[in-house]
Image (cartoon, rainbow, N blue to C red; front, side, top):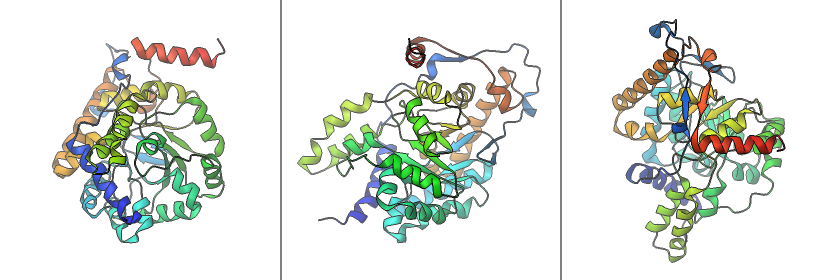
Length: 363
């Protein structure tokens, strides 16, 4: 029988490889249905626009958050090194991938701690699954933060992936209590992070009520963990695993589109990181106008990070320029200005948002 600790590490490498080699984006974010109102007389200088923002007390050069991607296998170390150098170079927030592998095997800690070594002043977010929090308690959260000298911790919820993954945990009971216990005692901000299925206002209310300081909505419409796990099942030599292929394929359509989740959760009033299919600086600008505070990207930065620092920096430069132009064309001198701008939502996304609002208002 394979060592469970080794399985955790090898699974991390599987995920990274599949994300690079296969088509794993699914769904519909809703950004195509969102249009920012053009300001024909913006009355500001594009080159002097202030793209800076603060999140949970930390200053960032612009609202791009390098979302947690990887770590936990020796071959992932260089990717985290390059991503962290980008965070340092551009003064961005950054998260690491799930730290479970290194918590199980301390020999893998360097694949995560390299991020802090390369970005000593960046806003850095540790990452632990809510199932592991429930099963191991606050001690694992403390160790995850200490490992990378983090400024906050993301507790990720990924039950769609767990339901399809051959090694998945199907018991979600007790997780909210575990979150509440962590928030009561923890000295660092706690962020709840979905991984591609979105978060509703109802869930957001429960999360904020438990004491979380922010929510990463992880909406449907970008990287699909159902698709990734379906591919892993297809590649497996186990007949039992292969039965999960069609299950993963069926549930690639499951989730709350990113824009719909963002509109819903923004009603709760708490800080939001918008992730899930954000692919440009224009998507970022739309997200901030709809209520986000930061915008997370993972997949668009992964291939450039594997290629080299120059490729990664070029992509970030492009995203920053797109964001700056969107600010300019809406007449936004600051990010705070942008958050007051009107975003028009049309089409299928408008229908979904209106349906949620009608239910909320008791119609």
